[in-house]
Image (tube, rainbow, N blue to C red; front, side, top):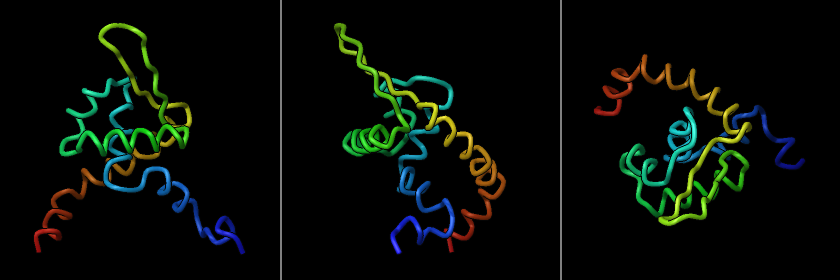
Length: 112
């Protein structure tokens, strides 16, 4: 039995794309349109430049994020969610609402 057949549900492939601490947050920041690297770094608090670069490359390789480089001075690069990425962002919305509804409870458990 191969790995695809072992998947009980779609969580395994979904988490393979956005798993980890940063990828979902980065994708979420592209919900309203293209974002420049520096702006992403400011919005995703606590992420290092190295981790941001690595996560963006992985998201791009998975077809979730599009990178567009503008040949100008100074150089400009924008990142945006692809149609595939936007469909994933739509699924993150209920998860975001759930987190907002239970934020205090989660924080209380984590303090214990």
